[in-house]
Amino acid sequence: MFDQLKQEFPGQVEIFDATEIFCGSADRICRHVRWERFMYSYTDHPSDYAAGIIGLNLNPFLEFLTP
Image 1: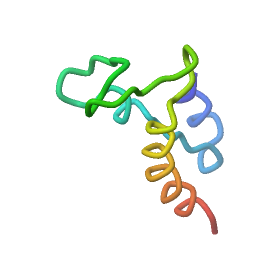
Image 2: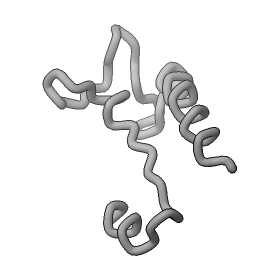
Image 3: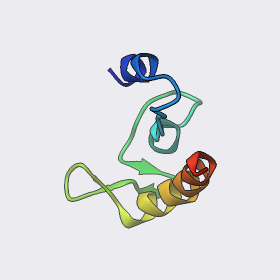
Image 4: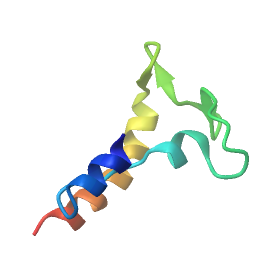
C-alpha cells in the first residue's frame, strides 16, 4: 500500500521503514528481543529502548526531507 502511494504521488511521499531495526537483515525474523533488549512493551508498542533506536534513524531521515 505504501509503495503504491509513493508511486501515485511521486516526490510527495517518502517511507521510513523500521523493519531493519526490529528484524535485522540476517534472518529477517522479527523477535521481541534484539541485542538482548526488549523491543516491545505494552503488547505492540515499541519499548523505550526501541524508540530510541528508531529516533536515531528517523531524525536524519526527516532532516533529509526538510528543504
